[in-house]
Amino acid sequence: MFQPARDDYPSPLCKETDVRSLDNASRRCAALAACAILAFTAVPLAAQDTTHAMGGAGRELGGHRFVPSRIVVDPFIASRFTSSIGFGGARNLEVPVYNYQDSLVTTVTGDLGFMNIDFEYQQQVTGWLALRGGVGAIARLGVDGFSFAAEGVSTIYGYNVGATGRILRSGRFQLSAALDYSSNALYGVQPLTYLQGVGGEVRRGIDSVLAIGGTVDSTTIRDILDQIDLSQYNAVQQGTANRTSVGLRLAYAATPWLGFTVATQSGVGNLLQRKDLGIIDVGAGASLDFGALWNVPIGVALSTRYQNANERSSDLGADITTFGAFISYAARRDLALGLDLSNASLGQVTGGTLRASRAAITMTYYF
Image 1 (tube, helix red, strand yellow):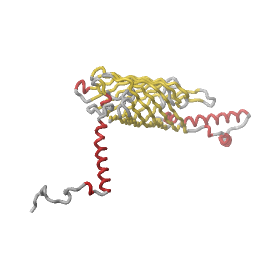
Image 2: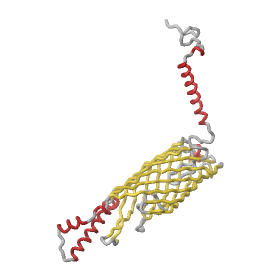
Image 3: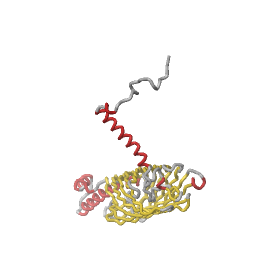
Image 4: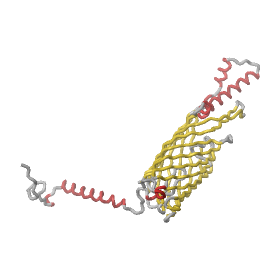
């Protein structure tokens, strides 16, 4: 019959042990256990450091929880991880067509499709400084006959590193300084560039043959091709783009449901064929928290940005103006997850305007 254990039962596991009787191995185990207990109890104490705003509290000012934007970056130094996966298209890509004498024959238009993926991590290292780094890539494809011949398939991938230092923070206002460096590599297959180069060489060879009274047949064409240095015409285009910039970022909370952000940057960059280019980059945005207004867990970030050049599109043109809206689930302080929409206008070397639209799923998680 089962009998409950008694507290005074002389079990060898519960008997008193004289500390002096412990051997050396037991003393080492006891010391390690004590260190482990101290380490685990120290973790919660470190988490209570008031200089680190945990779980998204660092993006709040004056009772307003700012909705993050990838177009206009906020000045906050909270630790966070951001990921974005999107797709889109570009309309009215203008490509000039030249003859063998390098004279402009015509300009034709086409459309592009693209996909992108980006990841970025920021870590707050002190009460006023955060370091960050990210990687990303974009793939482009001509979606009609001519744009495929002109732009083919291309990919741009690279990384960025930076730091944000808080200068001033009050109840409703924060001002920070930022330093950023980015580097990207471009690889593309552009059949039209290759065909135009080789075709021009063949045409010049034919004109030379005709000028001396010769005849042109298949043998003549083969002889001309044998004399052409095809290595100077490569269907695979490649290049690098990098830029270094410094700037200011500020945020102001007007009410618990409305806030504003401004970001400015300037610096220098080598963007594919554009070397030692001065960078001008300025943007502004508005953050709306409908949870504070109507108790609806939705946040919206509206933003606009102007750049005189961008390292991911400098091969297509310059002077980019972007408008965007990020519609986010806002019930949790530590999470912003939603639909990221943007529309951009880019000036092309032909004088036309390339218009690109993008939709992405973007998530930012605050630690």
